[in-house]
Length: 426
Image (cartoon, rainbow, N blue to C red; front, side):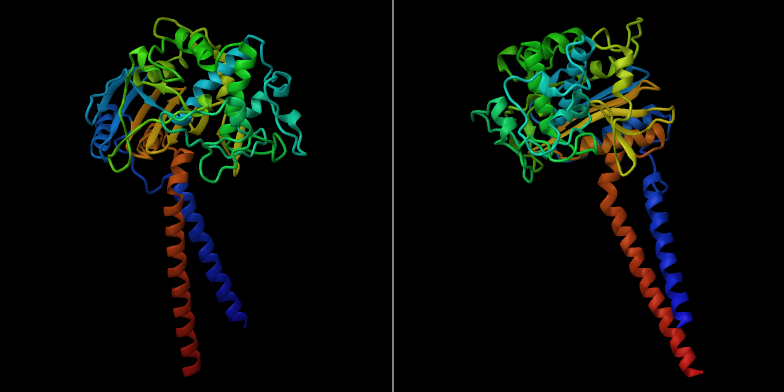
């Protein structure tokens, strides 16, 4: 019996070691190679172009930034050509730009980051749920720690269909994505833990309108897009403005229509590779002495937004409106935001504030291309895996672990059976 117990414990130990080695190896990228040698910018750009041009047809635009300047751009189009001034709808990437609009009001003293948002709301109020609505603050809405449990995701409204009012959408979003409750309400203690909430950004949209006295898009045009020089960006598409719009495609290369949204702040930004490059550069000191933030925000506010405000499983993943993808090995993080929506919109922007290097990818026709390639950039830039790459590869990691478990357990059974036969034979 003792021999059996020792054998079982030894087998368990091997399983634990295998699980730890595989898990750590995946998280650290031990078996992963970058798309190009680190430091070889042109080789990495060439690899990006190959990846973009060999995926399923759709429209895509990308820019690689080195030291705050554009190193190279590449556009791929099906049908009507796209260029750096062609607009894409960018889904949740909208949230990062919305956060700038919120923080501009904070800097002007018109919003308090840590005051209950109820102080500013007149048109709509959070429903009573038994949790502390007073704990819902701007800081927590920006970092998805306000305790909201809407689970949104917005699926949008078909072209020509009437959208909800902002207040009705907050009460019950008619275009809630599958599996989302669609009700913006407090369902867990505010400040306790991270829970992604598209509804929190729709609430910030209402907050901006209440405090500024303007429509959300008008405020963002005046306070953010105009001062930054983002001349081809808007939260409300208007064909009469003369913008070029990239045709949208499904994953099977079928042309599709862009959807409409009430939730402008969370998911409805239309922008271009050129404008997103300008936005990324605005996080850095300019080549002609322009300050980081370009007078819209201060450098101190930008640093505050890039500090950890939310974590999952002990990993810091969110600041104020920006995702923290991976450590940049300079005491900070690679920052940015991704967007993904139906039928096949995927967008990703990353910036390493320590080096001024970054990447912009906007595309339709593939649900993960932008996020995957932006993750490859993070690994090439820092040697670290970004947390979205880890999430995308979790299934493969678990498969490798499970396969190893099967091999180890079968091997243990074979050894035990042979050992028993030897003892019986003797």
